[in-house]
Image (cartoon, rainbow, N blue to C red; front, top):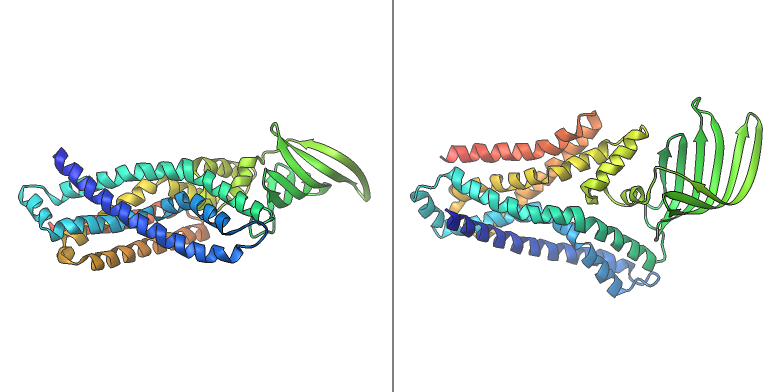
Length: 354
């Protein structure tokens, strides 16, 4: 059976890689059309735009892989069905369960490489690409639509207007609140840089509030220990779905330690951790269309089926995620339920074919 397993792996892997390449090229072309509008700002030329697009491709590969796996398994196994090879395999005594298991192992082996890309390669390249683009365009690193961000650090509430390349902050305000929810001090700094585990504030103006009196002092520099590290800033500058599991875990821990809402990031964390379950669901839901009445369908019809199933999954995934966050259910439910629904539908359809 090892020969058969290798043959199925080669079939599914080849079709999946071709589908992934087509999807990446399509996404690259559409993104280029958008990115061309920014060419000419500062030193951001066409070559810089191409370099930016190439750097973000590992992240796009990770995002498009479930769709490519679904389409690839439909096309690859569909080609075997059209050539009556699957009929021969079943006539030789191989059950639907055995064939589906071989295809699932092939997909999961591919997913190991993709998960490693999404965890260790894509996030740092995505962050580097954003920083280089911002630097070339003469802009600050875009965080939350360019309006800065708020963060809590113990009793301090911090607002940072902008983050510049090289882990430098600009226009910082720190509001210190006591246990009675009364404002004790307001600190403003023109900039800050991170060195040896501390933030070094520059151009500091600090106002201490004592009843009706306000005492103001000006400092050239001030060293501050903070739980907000450059890693936390990297998380703030990226969408949750573009972060690694490790970065999400660190940020969820930071939010929960400061009594802040971490549900959105915990949902993204569970989605990343359960990615292999999603890949398995994509494979299982494709099998009934290979062994069922559609086995004689053409490649175009299988491609359409794959795209529609993939879009349906992403739509259900998006809707259930928002419903979970809206009604306060555990994020694990929103991350797991779409894959379980597709797995259940796939296994039910396969059982009906026996």
